[in-house]
Length: 293
Ligand code: RIB
Image (cartoon, rainbow, N blue to C red; front, side):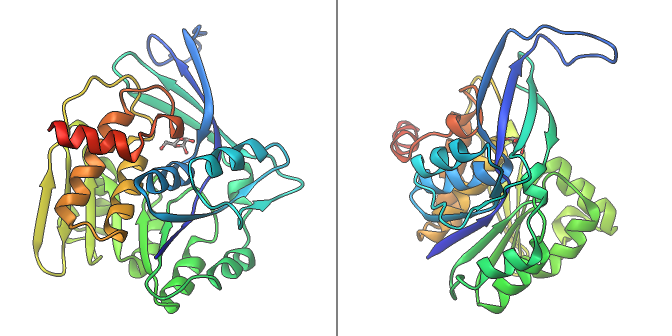
């Protein structure tokens, strides 16, 4: 089936710095990597590299053709992405410190110029059994999720970057919620509940170097996976890689445990390389690493 991903497309400017800049400090970077990013685009690339049929839904400006070429080069369908004449493509300034942690400043631009009418037009292509993937970096997510549900599709929602109001609107239409540990706490606090009792049928919590846990909240079951031990150079996009790879694996018939293992391995490889989408490994690389154990 098709994974439709209504998600952001960004130009990522990743600066390696000795530490995060303090207020008033001018800090020389030691390197710059420019490339494709955006939580949505990263998830689409991961899902396509895992082998799924992925159609990206989003928007770029007149300066963004390179991003579509990059997405298509990774096997992502880009035939529905809007080219907006008056709004630049989104971009992100990313600072990465020596332990691989990052801080990100976003300028959403075209990602926040997606109308509800356009999103509903996209949803007319969604079929029963397809999956709609969403994050919090674009507009019209709730309208799209509602329409996708009506079409018989499954909705996967990453509440990232965390926004309490957006999450509250999305949860009633969400089949699988994906959050990192910090977002899980933020969401649970905003709803006055515990992370394990969030009101969704399925919950996936990623914990970086501490692995991830999938909760089947309807059945009261959970499956955890450790994170392979690696030396991280840049953790940007690791969660997106996990989410996209997990969704693709499940869509292609993998069990929850198999999908978790593959997604954890893909993320572990991704953080050993600088950059975001370009750092996402191939299916062959993930398979080889899994075989090595
Ligand atoms: O999750 C990482 C992503 O967040 C980056 O690629 C950046 O563009 C922002 O969207």
